[in-house]
Length: 203
View 1: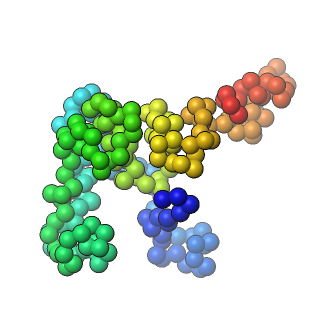
View 2: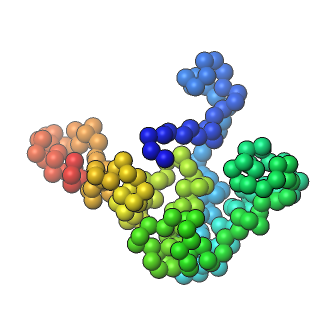
View 3: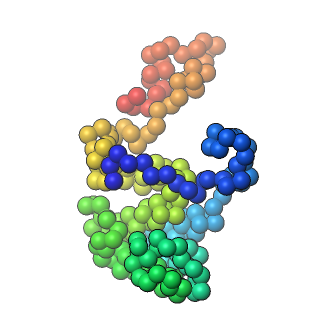
């Protein structure tokens, strides 16, 4: 989807008073730690060790939590988007369960990048996809792609708007000018040349 900017509803506070989105006061708690991210960290750790069964067990805990439960009404849009019968109240948990075939084969639903040709590489790509599904809009994405050394490939493969611009030095962020201006050596502020030497390459 190019040049489209879908809005997240997860941060909307229905009890926000005043003039709506510009009102600072709200009732929603800030997120310090996420139950789901804890399980995703554990799943990634076990998968990196090759214990895929344990990794899958953690992922399926999250998917069971996210599933519609038996008897729970689904919104009208569910049958339009996901298929099925309108008014169906069966559980979606069985359809959401992850198995080894998600990353032992090239599952087309996961859109694995070209370099994901082994089970281990597909597992890391799968975890990145799962983190996207679970943590969308929570400011983890750049850190995830940078730490897994997949930023360049994923940006070039999946984001046509950045293909020409993304460069290897983008794996690091620029050091803020305000920080560089606070560095002193021998009681003297750094010169412009010294600040540039402290800056990450490419900036």
